[in-house]
Length: 224
Image 1 (cartoon, rainbow, N blue to C red):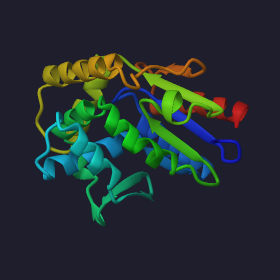
Image 2: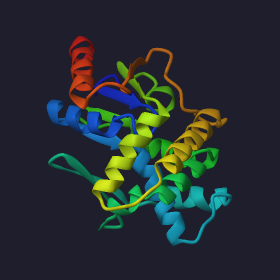
Image 3: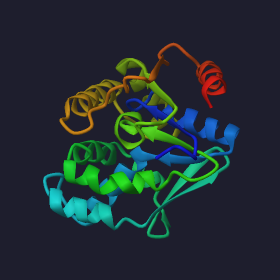
Image 4: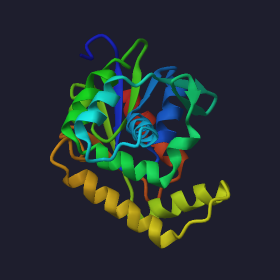
């Protein structure tokens, strides 16, 4: 799968810095990006528009097979385009994230999206950000990273992000939501969230993004 095109997988739960590291690394290497979490959020967003529930697995799998989805890299961000509409901001709500976490546990949905994710592998290379990139989607990637951080720290980061956008949230509720999502993601029977056996783990709890990138680039220079 990855013999001719280099790939780096970056897995981990929400709030550990995966998205920022992925963007900075893609910019540094001039590679493509796969934000697999956004794919599940897009499906969640589309499902909500179609009034589907997380229990409707066959319908969700069918919807997953027909998503008209694109990623557009712009400066220090990635726009998510669904049916020629920029839905990037719509995907960042807590309700969309929770819905996405629920449907990500469905085997038919994951199977429907598997090849779609692999199709993002194009020259000159790919940075794949998600929860099972190194374990399931690209198991033969030459460099697999797994970022982690405490639920408390991740809650604080999310709280700051939302406050900057003028959204008032309860920090305790945020941390509880993160812990619940972690439990759901790590304990699901299909593609649970965990480091690949050969993944390199970086705990970002006490690190700045600059310090994380220093570690990541050092690893990239050794392997890629």
